[in-house]
Length: 251
Image 1: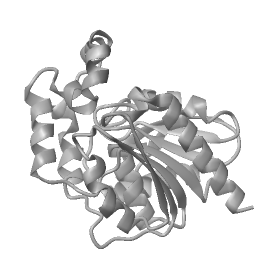
Image 2 (image 1 turned 60 degrees about the horizontal axis):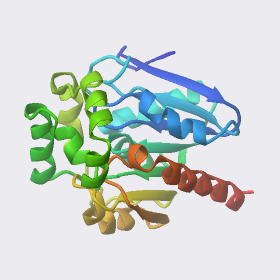
Image 3 (image 1 turned 45 degrees about the horizontal axis):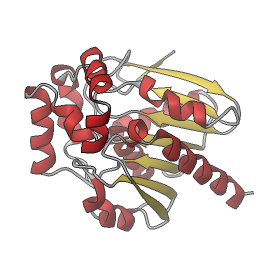
């Protein structure tokens, strides 16, 4: 179904399950389809709302700040009667949830952040530029070398069916690059899942993330940037345990 933003743009989302609300947000260049494995692993004890972020999937192409997007995520959840909710985000989706924790922490009470970022620098910008100009570069940067070599054929097939489209993503990219966690703090409970071989964000950002989210716990997984595709079983296990522990703490 579609959510209409205050400026009249459309954001597509799908929902299923019952119980506490969890919003699931995909990474750059993806769609809500990439979050369906995690949503399935969470089981039926949660209401899972999967969103196509602007410039992705079935949603409209339009520009808005991360703060404005965080308000729209809250509005989607409120439309479905969730004044308080949890979140799971991958990369770009993690950044959106980080912003939501900073701006709307009374609504987004806790979040599992897969491959989160503390901000953007020239190294990241140059890497994304390569994705737009060098065929096949995206997969080489988001997967660990071992996983890429082992699954090269299926990865290439996926990339051909789901090409990186910089011309479509441009309106949102111009806003994302301004993101930073510097001098920003959220006391909400957060799970950080970091890829050991993540070239994009990874361990180099962990200290800054821990400073901004002092009530966080973290795990470093044997993966590249795309943890949810390389190591989905362990990622889902850790996320499910995190949410169960959070609920127990608040009973």
